[in-house]
Length: 189
Image (tube, rainbow, N blue to C red; front, side):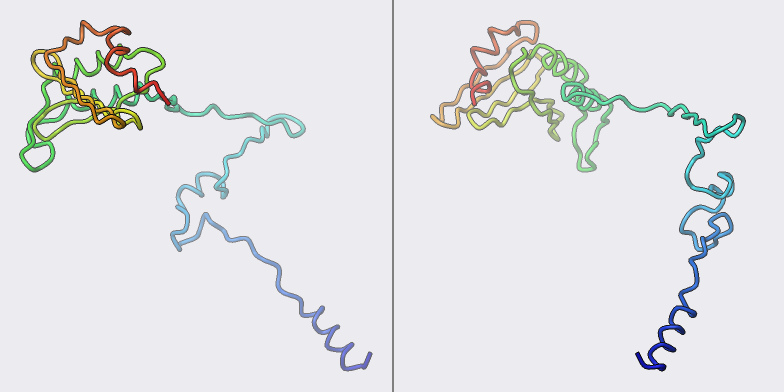
């Protein structure tokens, strides 16, 4: 190697990059992280789990705050239906009618009567205030609208195009046999 090459290599190592200096987040003013929060946390954004009162490196796990329990699909649908009861007149800003509380209660009661093995419906609310449940299954479309005298059911077999309609059905009359007779295609793959 030539002397000039050795000199360049030596200069390169002598002038190595400056070491990275950790930013002091507690005094930072660039707004990247809240300086007040970091200052409260002793200059670190990570909570400390080291118990300094004991010898060694014992750790203590802080209790987590209240966490929302995961909800199942039935509960999610129930919560959505229940929320319809809080809607006032003109809830959509275009003159929608508020849903009747009794219709909301009947929809929730029906949801609780759906036998195991049947898919769950989707809830709906129309601007006329009609509360409903519907299924859009590959084999069958079914639409239930809750009314003062119970509910109405419309179904359409997607393969045969056969349609059925029933009205004045009481939620109290629902049982597994009723679902099997009218919505059995929902259970077919």
